[in-house]
Length: 398
Image (cartoon, rainbow, N blue to C red; front, top):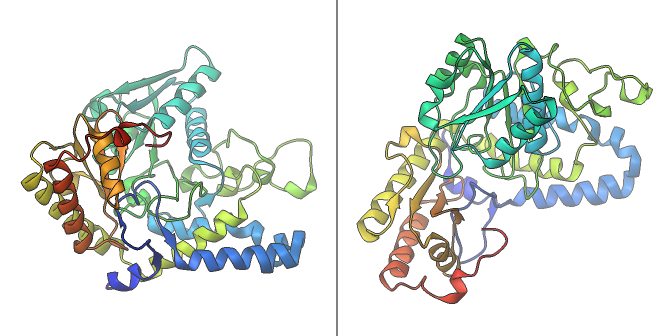
């Protein structure tokens, strides 16, 4: 397949006058999603009412959409299911992995991991008892920290701040060699870089869909369970839709076969409908070509910023093979600079303490946007236009 990026760009609604470099945090609206949502609301919910669970196939959506996400992460059919939030799926994956390694008590992660993942791991360890431990090391020290004490590694493939990318196959091999299992968070990978959980040997993988997969704010998360664990993994959160026969209303829990046991609560039908429409874009895109174009755009951005904004320091790996589809720069006044950029129509985001973060999604971003963003950033830095009170007042979401 040859990806026509002009065609994929036309599939998104992008506000006039905006250069959107924050799809790594929230993807823009796919045009087809609005129509799909309207149809789901009016024709399905509106006309079918509760019969939509059968007539419109709502109950099958988590698995059907899961298979479509699975194709983007190298997962075989029947190994990915949608639903709930990423935090819930992290909890399920971790708890299941610990149960599969009953003689071990250490969860290993790194200090670059998204804090929510660490909070979940810490909370789970506390719940299980004082003998359990979340151990964190620097991202570069993960491999040597995988010892025979470790039950499971919990790693995010692409660092949310810097874009630094872990080597999934190598670290998973290291974990397996030590007798541990590997859980991978693909929040900043799925739809951004080529991912192959099968070739990479992942035992579990989780991710959200509102970033590069464009499902909309609060879109549902996914969980992957490797086939060899599918019938033995305990789902931890024994929700009624993960039951073998939910509508038998048995008082005792029996896990559903395979990946279906990882379902918990009632699926978010409206959000799944939006995601299903958003995934149609990937019928016209090749992940390898998307990644290659992302590298072109990010390399041009780095070169332009370093040539015109010497006070900004690159925080991302310089080697594009070592990062995801984002670029970050450091500056002590990063928050104010980002607010000045947003005021000029260039939308990125800020991550404490000093990171300006920019995402490059070729499905709707091209070289013209990159050049325009560099020009505006240079003007802001040259004129110190960030040094204004209105740009320094912290909003709730940064």
